[in-house]
Image 1 (cartoon, rainbow, N blue to C red):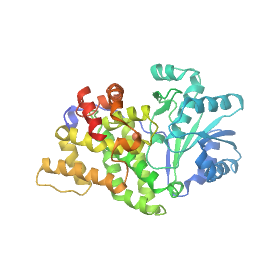
Image 2: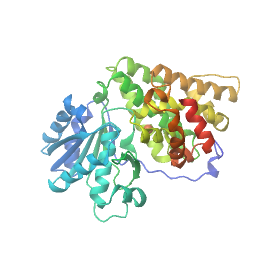
Image 3: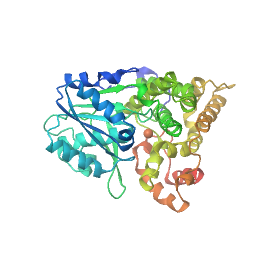
Image 4: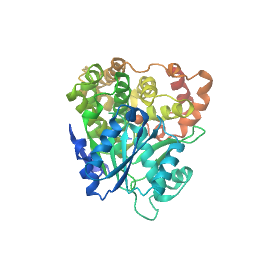
Length: 390
Ligand SMILES: [Fe+2]
């Protein structure tokens, strides 16, 4: 890979998420938007937490006031499993739904995406992972996404991550089952607790970082990634300290979306590659596992990614006497961002033990995110990264 390739030497293409509405209060447009897409009866896929705080009913109310029937499916768990997906698909099949809404963090959005893929294709998750669903007959169920956290950017991507009963993770993709629209209303995020604000915010930053520095070429994705990193760096601490700060919440929501667009164009890096393996072996919070791994992957990448880390240092406000020093300062600035966010520093805190490292290494080596890292790690190097992050 040549970093900062001249444009006349690169080839790239972009697909954008089809429709995005951003703004404080824009959730009130959900009913009219669903109606305009022909909705008469919608399944609202969400989690028990959002049912409990009343947000699910509030959002369902916006559908009902536009004359769209709405049924809440509040069963999605963190790190969703096929059990919830199967239950949702059964409801969609038998109860006459013609519309899908996902409300929540990445888990609800991913579960709803997989429901849509399975409803369209009738395929098992194994088949969807290997064959996809883009050749399936018929029309996917229309689908609007309403994120309630700022981090996953899942509303902007074509992928979804889901587990089976044994804990095995499947990464599935479909352009056809990409949400038709997303409504990004920062007001929905003001009640997100500080620790979740921190871990989801780090996820957004690490999406942008990974997409910006991996071997994939896409200058438009790079622009989205750089702005996402700038916004997270400038706003995450405020959003954690004062959740009601709507300016910081708005900046974080836009950052999460831009980072989601960046990974939809370019993918992630080894931080996500190694973290996905961790999350297959234990149940833990995505952003926490990423946070523990980030410093070690950054140092491993430093020589290869120096020009890009220097750019990141600049957009985070760091200086340096030359590019090499800037790049090293960029690494320290990124670690400082994590430290101020207060997210996890050691995988052992999440329940990872030394005797799991062999298994993690084998899993991580197979992951696409690991393989497109700017410096492709050998198995020995992956093992050393895990050991350092313990
Ligand atoms: Fe992520």
